[in-house]
Amino acid sequence: MLIYILIHSDNKGAISAFHKGHCLNLTSNTCIKCTEATLCVVDLSISLIYVHTSINLADPIS
Image (cartoon, rainbow, N blue to C red; front, top):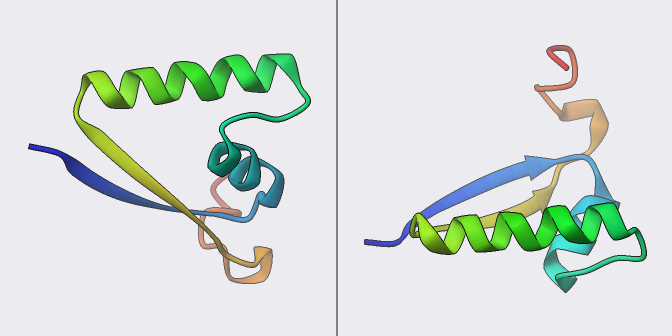
């Protein structure tokens, strides 16, 4: 059973790279590919959406 997870982020670059499946940074590309492979194996699907920094509730925690 495929499980869907919605992730809010204020990092437009990371969201864009993940949607495209690649970026110019080799290390980030490796991370994207590893994440995609892991998600597939464990039957997860993620959706990334942008949230403005001013309303990002996770910012004070990180």
